[in-house]
Length: 99
Image (cartoon, rainbow, N blue to C red):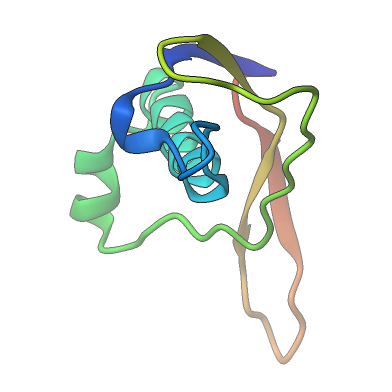
């Protein structure tokens, strides 16, 4: 599990003064990239290897609404994999990031 704390900013708000759904997804993507970086795989390494992280699925669980300048906690639980093609099969290697 990997966790970061943020403050909900002005640009994160919707017209009801609640944090908008896309802001949750943006913060989630940022935390995923920080997880890679802080666990020995910085963005420069992605560039060097000419690969990129692939997000296959995002899942948001809402516990309450967040308002302007409130602190929020983004918790990441993820396994990342590298697909290896060998004679038509797709085995993969999984490793927990920050776990």
